[in-house]
Image (cartoon, rainbow, N blue to C red; front, side):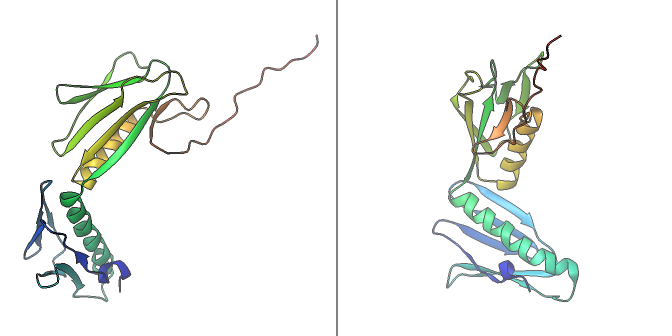
Length: 193
């Protein structure tokens, strides 16, 4: 039995959870999210204690065991998202690299012959803290916020994939606080002729 799946999900004030068969809808001050669960995972809302309880009706089946904890985690993420929201900070290192928001798109300049334009999803907001990097020491910084954890994480990952950090000088896009394993460049051989 899943240890995570057994834990009930607390419903904070202002958040409403509706269950109709396998469909779960969570709405709160930040927005509303829907999720279609597995048919053999039973989700009930205890309004007396303000908790969501997830039960596995077929504990012997491998797929249902896997989906028990997953369903509980997804519901928990939806509840946190519509009440508090999520954020992801990114940094761009490199001379001449930068980021700006233009017409609902994130325009990223990372050393290619053209800037990279990425459409910002409806559930995500981008706040640019530092628009341009100054060398390899002071990065360009921006923050993505949203209430859908999956969409926010996927968008942040797609941005990072456009120019992942390279190991020699560390230039590229990385998550804030991410450690990059550095390599030593080739040393020039100094020999007497």
